[in-house]
Image 1 (cartoon, rainbow, N blue to C red):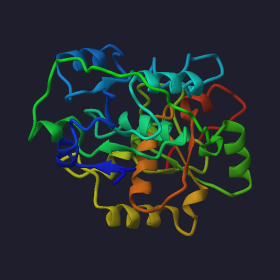
Image 2 (image 1 turned 30 degrees about the horizontal axis):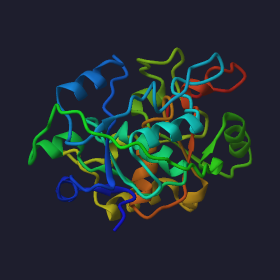
Image 3 (image 1 turned 30 degrees about the vertical axis):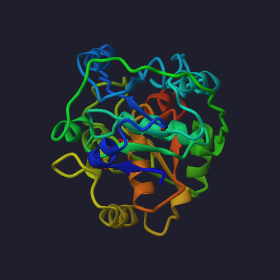
Length: 281
Protein backbone atom coordinates (compact mmCIF):
# COMPACT_ATOMS: atom_id res chain seq x y z
CA UNK A 1 0.00 0.00 0.00
CA UNK A 2 1.17 3.51 -0.83
CA UNK A 3 0.61 6.57 1.34
CA UNK A 4 0.10 9.77 -0.63
CA UNK A 5 -1.20 12.39 1.83
CA UNK A 6 -1.00 11.59 5.56
CA UNK A 7 -0.08 8.65 7.73
CA UNK A 8 -0.20 8.02 11.47
CA UNK A 9 2.67 7.54 13.89
CA UNK A 10 1.51 3.96 14.48
CA UNK A 11 1.59 3.18 10.76
CA UNK A 12 5.04 4.70 10.39
CA UNK A 13 6.33 2.75 13.41
CA UNK A 14 5.14 -0.52 11.87
CA UNK A 15 7.30 0.24 8.80
CA UNK A 16 10.18 2.00 10.57
CA UNK A 17 12.79 -0.58 9.50
CA UNK A 18 11.38 -1.18 6.04
CA UNK A 19 14.20 -0.97 3.51
CA UNK A 20 12.10 0.90 0.97
CA UNK A 21 10.82 3.59 3.33
CA UNK A 22 12.76 6.84 3.80
CA UNK A 23 11.95 9.37 6.52
CA UNK A 24 12.87 13.02 6.11
CA UNK A 25 13.09 15.44 9.02
CA UNK A 26 11.97 18.89 7.78
CA UNK A 27 12.13 20.87 11.03
CA UNK A 28 12.93 24.53 10.47
CA UNK A 29 12.57 27.97 12.02
CA UNK A 30 12.04 31.08 9.91
CA UNK A 31 13.59 33.08 12.74
CA UNK A 32 16.78 31.00 12.95
CA UNK A 33 17.81 28.72 10.09
CA UNK A 34 20.17 26.73 12.33
CA UNK A 35 17.38 25.63 14.68
CA UNK A 36 16.23 22.70 12.52
CA UNK A 37 19.65 21.11 11.98
CA UNK A 38 20.45 21.55 15.66
CA UNK A 39 17.19 19.90 16.71
CA UNK A 40 17.89 17.03 14.31
CA UNK A 41 21.30 16.42 15.89
CA UNK A 42 19.72 16.44 19.36
CA UNK A 43 17.26 13.72 18.39
CA UNK A 44 15.24 12.54 15.41
CA UNK A 45 13.09 9.64 14.26
CA UNK A 46 15.05 6.43 13.60
CA UNK A 47 16.69 6.37 10.14
CA UNK A 48 15.57 9.94 9.36
CA UNK A 49 17.61 12.16 7.04
CA UNK A 50 17.46 15.95 7.35
CA UNK A 51 16.23 18.35 4.65
CA UNK A 52 16.98 22.05 5.11
CA UNK A 53 14.29 24.42 3.83
CA UNK A 54 16.76 27.07 2.65
CA UNK A 55 19.57 24.85 1.41
CA UNK A 56 17.74 21.78 0.07
CA UNK A 57 14.13 22.71 -0.63
CA UNK A 58 14.69 26.22 -2.04
CA UNK A 59 17.12 27.99 -4.34
CA UNK A 60 19.07 31.21 -3.82
CA UNK A 61 17.05 34.38 -3.30
CA UNK A 62 17.41 37.07 -5.98
CA UNK A 63 16.05 40.61 -6.39
CA UNK A 64 13.06 39.22 -8.28
CA UNK A 65 12.15 36.20 -6.16
CA UNK A 66 10.33 35.61 -2.92
CA UNK A 67 11.98 34.30 0.23
CA UNK A 68 11.91 30.62 -0.76
CA UNK A 69 12.27 30.29 -4.54
CA UNK A 70 11.65 26.88 -6.03
CA UNK A 71 14.76 24.68 -5.92
CA UNK A 72 16.72 23.63 -8.95
CA UNK A 73 14.80 20.43 -9.58
CA UNK A 74 17.76 18.66 -11.17
CA UNK A 75 19.84 19.35 -8.05
CA UNK A 76 16.95 18.29 -5.81
CA UNK A 77 16.59 15.02 -7.68
CA UNK A 78 20.29 14.34 -7.09
CA UNK A 79 19.86 15.05 -3.38
CA UNK A 80 16.88 12.70 -3.22
CA UNK A 81 19.03 9.95 -4.69
CA UNK A 82 21.79 10.77 -2.20
CA UNK A 83 19.23 10.39 0.60
CA UNK A 84 18.42 6.90 -0.68
CA UNK A 85 15.14 7.80 -2.38
CA UNK A 86 14.35 6.00 -5.61
CA UNK A 87 11.17 6.19 -7.67
CA UNK A 88 9.76 3.22 -5.75
CA UNK A 89 10.49 4.58 -2.26
CA UNK A 90 7.75 5.44 0.21
CA UNK A 91 8.79 8.82 1.59
CA UNK A 92 7.53 10.18 4.91
CA UNK A 93 8.14 13.82 5.86
CA UNK A 94 7.74 15.26 9.34
CA UNK A 95 8.39 18.40 11.35
CA UNK A 96 7.39 19.93 14.69
CA UNK A 97 5.10 22.59 13.20
CA UNK A 98 1.97 20.67 12.27
CA UNK A 99 3.30 19.83 8.83
CA UNK A 100 4.01 23.45 7.86
CA UNK A 101 7.47 22.59 6.52
CA UNK A 102 7.02 18.89 5.77
CA UNK A 103 4.25 19.90 3.37
CA UNK A 104 6.81 21.68 1.20
CA UNK A 105 8.78 18.47 0.62
CA UNK A 106 5.52 16.57 0.04
CA UNK A 107 4.54 19.04 -2.67
CA UNK A 108 8.00 19.17 -4.29
CA UNK A 109 8.11 15.38 -4.62
CA UNK A 110 4.70 15.41 -6.29
CA UNK A 111 6.03 18.01 -8.73
CA UNK A 112 8.80 15.53 -9.55
CA UNK A 113 6.26 12.82 -10.34
CA UNK A 114 6.63 10.99 -7.02
CA UNK A 115 3.24 10.38 -5.40
CA UNK A 116 4.43 7.89 -2.76
CA UNK A 117 5.06 10.62 -0.21
CA UNK A 118 3.09 11.39 2.95
CA UNK A 119 3.31 13.76 5.90
CA UNK A 120 3.41 12.31 9.40
CA UNK A 121 0.10 13.39 10.93
CA UNK A 122 0.80 15.20 14.18
CA UNK A 123 4.52 15.28 13.44
CA UNK A 124 7.20 14.91 16.06
CA UNK A 125 4.80 15.52 18.96
CA UNK A 126 2.53 12.66 17.96
CA UNK A 127 5.50 10.33 17.46
CA UNK A 128 6.98 11.11 20.86
CA UNK A 129 3.73 10.31 22.64
CA UNK A 130 4.37 6.66 21.79
CA UNK A 131 7.94 6.21 20.55
CA UNK A 132 11.46 7.46 21.11
CA UNK A 133 14.06 9.42 19.18
CA UNK A 134 17.66 8.66 18.33
CA UNK A 135 20.83 10.67 17.78
CA UNK A 136 22.31 7.95 15.55
CA UNK A 137 22.85 9.09 11.98
CA UNK A 138 21.28 6.82 9.37
CA UNK A 139 23.26 4.54 7.09
CA UNK A 140 22.24 5.67 3.64
CA UNK A 141 22.58 3.66 0.45
CA UNK A 142 22.66 6.15 -2.40
CA UNK A 143 20.46 5.48 -5.38
CA UNK A 144 19.15 7.24 -8.49
CA UNK A 145 15.97 9.29 -8.45
CA UNK A 146 14.57 9.96 -11.91
CA UNK A 147 12.57 13.18 -12.06
CA UNK A 148 9.40 13.55 -14.13
CA UNK A 149 8.81 17.25 -13.59
CA UNK A 150 5.25 18.55 -13.90
CA UNK A 151 5.43 22.33 -14.31
CA UNK A 152 1.63 22.56 -14.24
CA UNK A 153 1.71 22.14 -10.45
CA UNK A 154 2.46 25.83 -9.90
CA UNK A 155 1.80 29.30 -11.31
CA UNK A 156 4.07 32.31 -11.61
CA UNK A 157 3.09 35.89 -10.76
CA UNK A 158 2.10 36.81 -14.32
CA UNK A 159 -0.16 33.77 -14.58
CA UNK A 160 -1.79 34.66 -11.27
CA UNK A 161 -2.38 38.25 -12.42
CA UNK A 162 -3.88 37.15 -15.73
CA UNK A 163 -6.10 34.45 -14.28
CA UNK A 164 -7.38 36.78 -11.55
CA UNK A 165 -8.24 39.34 -14.24
CA UNK A 166 -10.04 36.61 -16.19
CA UNK A 167 -11.81 35.39 -13.01
CA UNK A 168 -10.66 31.83 -13.74
CA UNK A 169 -9.01 31.01 -10.39
CA UNK A 170 -9.85 31.11 -6.70
CA UNK A 171 -6.80 32.35 -4.80
CA UNK A 172 -6.40 31.27 -1.15
CA UNK A 173 -3.94 32.90 1.27
CA UNK A 174 -2.65 30.54 3.99
CA UNK A 175 -1.30 33.23 6.35
CA UNK A 176 -2.95 34.33 9.59
CA UNK A 177 -5.89 36.74 9.34
CA UNK A 178 -3.82 39.56 10.88
CA UNK A 179 -1.18 39.27 8.17
CA UNK A 180 -3.80 38.83 5.45
CA UNK A 181 -5.58 42.03 6.50
CA UNK A 182 -2.27 43.89 6.71
CA UNK A 183 -2.54 44.59 10.43
CA UNK A 184 0.70 42.72 11.21
CA UNK A 185 3.67 41.83 9.04
CA UNK A 186 6.56 40.34 11.00
CA UNK A 187 8.57 39.13 8.01
CA UNK A 188 7.96 40.98 4.74
CA UNK A 189 8.47 44.72 4.10
CA UNK A 190 4.92 45.34 2.84
CA UNK A 191 1.73 44.24 4.58
CA UNK A 192 -1.51 43.12 3.01
CA UNK A 193 -2.61 40.52 0.49
CA UNK A 194 -3.11 39.92 -3.22
CA UNK A 195 -6.38 41.56 -4.34
CA UNK A 196 -9.38 39.19 -4.62
CA UNK A 197 -7.68 36.50 -2.52
CA UNK A 198 -9.57 34.60 0.16
CA UNK A 199 -8.03 33.81 3.53
CA UNK A 200 -7.69 30.41 5.20
CA UNK A 201 -4.89 30.20 7.73
CA UNK A 202 -3.26 26.78 7.41
CA UNK A 203 -3.61 26.27 11.17
CA UNK A 204 -7.35 25.79 10.64
CA UNK A 205 -6.58 22.41 9.07
CA UNK A 206 -5.51 21.05 12.47
CA UNK A 207 -7.31 20.10 15.68
CA UNK A 208 -6.16 20.98 19.21
CA UNK A 209 -3.85 17.95 19.26
CA UNK A 210 -2.09 19.09 16.10
CA UNK A 211 -3.67 16.38 13.93
CA UNK A 212 -5.38 17.09 10.63
CA UNK A 213 -9.14 17.40 10.87
CA UNK A 214 -11.16 14.51 9.42
CA UNK A 215 -11.19 14.47 5.63
CA UNK A 216 -14.94 15.05 5.47
CA UNK A 217 -14.69 18.08 7.75
CA UNK A 218 -11.92 19.58 5.62
CA UNK A 219 -13.93 18.90 2.48
CA UNK A 220 -16.95 20.75 3.88
CA UNK A 221 -14.84 23.70 5.01
CA UNK A 222 -12.98 24.10 1.72
CA UNK A 223 -16.15 23.68 -0.32
CA UNK A 224 -17.75 26.42 1.75
CA UNK A 225 -14.75 28.64 0.99
CA UNK A 226 -14.35 28.00 -2.74
CA UNK A 227 -18.04 27.68 -3.59
CA UNK A 228 -18.62 26.38 -7.10
CA UNK A 229 -14.97 26.68 -8.11
CA UNK A 230 -13.51 23.31 -9.08
CA UNK A 231 -10.39 22.26 -7.12
CA UNK A 232 -8.32 22.42 -10.32
CA UNK A 233 -8.91 26.17 -10.42
CA UNK A 234 -7.87 26.80 -6.82
CA UNK A 235 -4.43 28.36 -6.27
CA UNK A 236 -2.74 28.59 -2.87
CA UNK A 237 -0.18 31.09 -1.65
CA UNK A 238 1.33 32.30 1.62
CA UNK A 239 4.37 34.36 2.57
CA UNK A 240 6.94 32.42 0.56
CA UNK A 241 5.29 29.31 -0.91
CA UNK A 242 5.87 27.00 2.06
CA UNK A 243 2.85 26.91 4.38
CA UNK A 244 0.50 27.24 1.39
CA UNK A 245 1.42 23.62 0.66
CA UNK A 246 -0.38 22.75 3.90
CA UNK A 247 -3.70 23.95 2.46
CA UNK A 248 -2.95 22.09 -0.75
CA UNK A 249 -2.24 18.92 1.24
CA UNK A 250 -5.45 19.38 3.24
CA UNK A 251 -7.48 19.64 0.03
CA UNK A 252 -5.84 16.54 -1.42
CA UNK A 253 -6.50 14.62 1.80
CA UNK A 254 -10.12 15.78 1.63
CA UNK A 255 -10.47 14.40 -1.90
CA UNK A 256 -10.47 17.87 -3.51
CA UNK A 257 -7.65 17.09 -5.91
CA UNK A 258 -5.76 19.19 -8.40
CA UNK A 259 -5.26 22.58 -6.74
CA UNK A 260 -2.03 24.46 -7.46
CA UNK A 261 0.56 26.69 -5.80
CA UNK A 262 1.60 30.26 -6.51
CA UNK A 263 5.16 29.38 -5.65
CA UNK A 264 6.59 32.89 -5.30
CA UNK A 265 3.73 33.96 -3.02
CA UNK A 266 3.45 37.27 -1.17
CA UNK A 267 7.19 37.89 -0.76
CA UNK A 268 7.62 37.68 -4.55
CA UNK A 269 4.41 39.55 -5.37
CA UNK A 270 5.55 42.68 -3.54
CA UNK A 271 8.93 42.75 -5.32
CA UNK A 272 7.18 44.40 -8.27
CA UNK A 273 5.70 47.79 -7.35
CA UNK A 274 3.32 47.59 -10.32
CA UNK A 275 1.42 44.73 -8.65
CA UNK A 276 -1.47 45.96 -6.59
CA UNK A 277 -1.83 45.25 -2.88
CA UNK A 278 -5.00 45.02 -0.79
CA UNK A 279 -5.58 45.40 2.94
CA UNK A 280 -8.55 44.68 5.18
CA UNK A 281 -10.93 41.81 4.67
